[in-house]
Image (cartoon, rainbow, N blue to C red; front, side):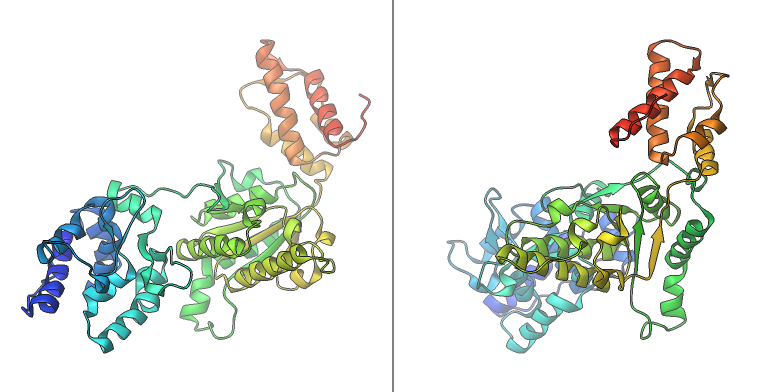
Length: 433
């Protein structure tokens, strides 16, 4: 039904421009139960022109010969038609609509209407504002509207299969979705740290009310920026996961090695895509090992240092302007440049667990389906060995696998102590059991 409307809009424009014969393209009555596409149009309250733009971006994926067939009716012997725009792909044999195509259908050759359409397509429609449709592959020095109209991959999946595909890490998308099956009760931290984390949860739940209902947009910067700092294995990543889980937001961990490209300009391009997606989908962004890029800067010695500093500055600008939650994690607060730390609303320290916290971690993580050898005193174990929650999980995994492989009826004390020794050795510490 909607693609019939696209045909009629295109045919009506060609008819009036090339034959001076007016035609009317009537917008169909939609039903939300017919398809995910119609449901989306209804729920988002898209205008007729926004629907047209979305259909132009979608049509090559659904009806590859659609545009070619319409044009051929008016140009049966072929010929050039630059006003219409459109390009050929490397493998796709049909016409790929560009922003120029949309401008032509909206405004034809009327100069005033074309200027209005150009502005609307680039800045004023919901689809581009929310990164559902993008204008891509603009050649160097070529007109801005010569780029292809491309629909976001997740929405393309939704409109064609009825399911939303989560983006996967790649050279073009430097982030990975992370999640957890654990609960808040599994996060064993001191009282002060827990209270600071609750402040973030409060912001996630009520920020929209503060900015919109209380009209505080002009006084408060958008977004929330927080630094998690502390030794590895103390719960920084788990906390980010749990914040997402309990506020129904996806959490994406950014791979800084993919962000910082050896090609000048690619870093900004990759980051721009990431932040645009995060903004439209309300993701939580988690920069692990942030000191790799936000560490203390040295003097500029060569072109590489110059561009590295530019990349950091660009990233910082995007983080400051981002309206969502951005978490930077570092093992050492002292490694982070103070010029960056001043920009954060909160600095949360994840300390090594106390013996009481280690005892809780042992009890929480040991399996419920099998007993521990009676000679194993967990309280003594917690007091004697100063290890992190991640270390404790590793020890338990090691001891459990040993138990299964040896077909034991309980987890042996010796296996737990062997696991503890392995964790000490990994960190270059000596331990005599």
